[in-house]
Image (cartoon, rainbow, N blue to C red; front, side, top):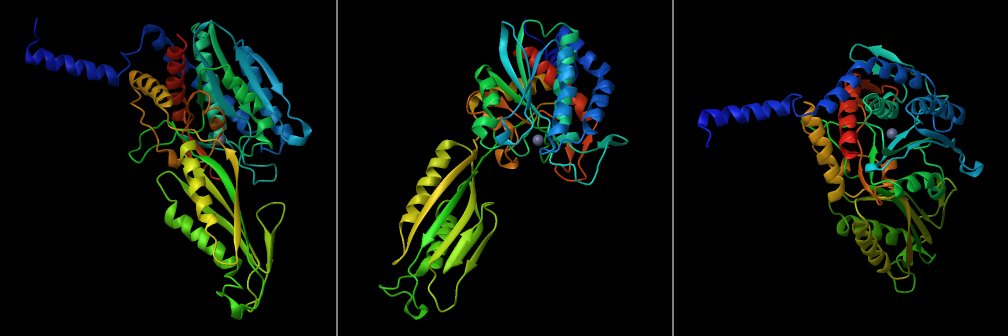
Length: 434
Ligand SMILES: [Zn+2]
């Protein structure tokens, strides 16, 4: 039977109001939401306790103490927990790992971090509530995200929805300054990803320019390059002749300017951050400082340039490397040059798999009456832990709380964003693990 126009319009209205309200949730999902809401205050207390423990990356004792606090929570939820120490040479506190094994649904990896950029000697910014917002060291980056993980799992556990699921939680102790080499400091995270199907990371939820909460399906890789240029030392009056050549400084300038003219493309950036040239030039062990000496009447013998390179996929990286190497090889007379590249964070490429996880998340949010979640343009985030696992499994980041001023003494968080993100996360985990 065909619906009359009026009835059809009423049906459409009923459907759209179902999307805006909570009617699209199953009875169990509605119970999960109720559990989240009933325990929001408890989550906020956990956040306060964690924020009031200083856990700057190099304050290993503090990082372990925050780890202990969260470990207790996962113990209560029936997870098997373990503290992973780093070898002394890595100079980091270690990571918290919590696991549970089951046979149903997707195997999930939930990623948080215990450390903050605020070391012990930073100006103290303890917990301070101010109406709808709260301030404190690491409150949003990312102890707020850690609490969202705990509270989402708690709500699921209360309705029996964790039974028979496979969930691994890793809270790293050195996200803000990963221990070197990353082959060691990220080995446990990578191993956990190999035992999982989907990674969810809880760095802050970022709002887009329309004020909508977003999800992150791509983050650019960070890497660096070193350019070494040689010229022939000689009297400046002979420069540009076949025998004296052009000198190392002109050659370095030619190369970096050709990068600017020929290598730029969307989502790719490269920035020469340090350049030294002259008769002698050297960079010290930190890589961020150096010395140069030269005279106006002497053709420069050497030049060195240090820069970064950020890219969204390995294809883009390879294309950039090839173009840069070709430019480096076209030397001016009397000069030679070489470039080397060093990888730091792998890219989280915006794959179809990542987008599919975002769609499930967005649907969970819409069904809970919290609106759809668009994706954040990949260029808008710095590097994060999720990038170490994104090349292996479908990944979504930016599921944490919302605030402002991260990495600054003004860091704060919007309290209501914790409950919102916890509801979305709990429904997402529920659906992925059925
Ligand atoms: Zn962070």
